[in-house]
Image 1 (tube, rainbow, N blue to C red):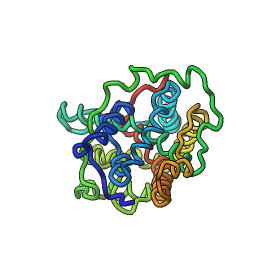
Image 2 (tube, helix red, strand yellow):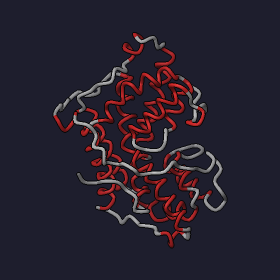
Image 3 (cartoon, rainbow, N blue to C red):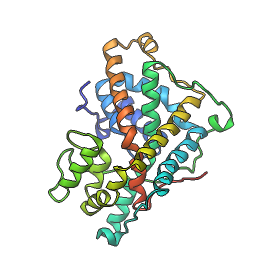
Image 4 (cartoon, helix red, strand yellow):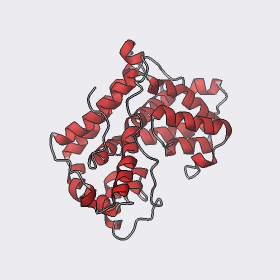
Length: 293
């Protein structure tokens, strides 16, 4: 799979545009993440089938409760061991409108974090052995509709600096984040977004870098991972994504191998230490969603 290929939202037409619109509506975020854009560019028919299979997972009250719990697990674990700084507009020396935009963009990442955690875990498992919903807990809580009010009317479409072009005043911080996550070049979207505000970008590493490199954050990641596993094990719905089901639907082995590798890489990489951090960064500008329900 050519992971440099993406079908951007502004270029999507017809049913592909419809899929993107449905992803945004279901995820309750004004963004179609990279994983969807890349899968659509390389394997559009598989992307359509994948969405049809995983969409029901995100429409239940069970998922809504998980998303709140996931956020709280991350933040409460940090708060038990460290202080999360809060940066005001004056701290960052930005205009009121710019500070509002900053907060709304980080709210978008706060919204998508638990959704991506489930997407990567469910798809990775289902593509390999179908081990989703092994301990189903079918009851009204898990199958009732996602409440209309939760994560509604939050977030703006993120803007970002180019993939590997960080200005001189933040280059050292970018290198520190790269080393922490083990990336050889470039950084995920969240860092490219925050890099638009150099003072915030540098402050995050200066103030919270020691937390990221401590046992505290390892515990954060472990607990977030356990929270995701619990939801995936208990969901009463199991997507039909195992290789045999894909072959029956006409997908060949080369495609199956490609998507298996892609989602395993994201499940075992991004989920581990990037996604939990999305809530932490949003908390520094007081822009986290519900943590108790």
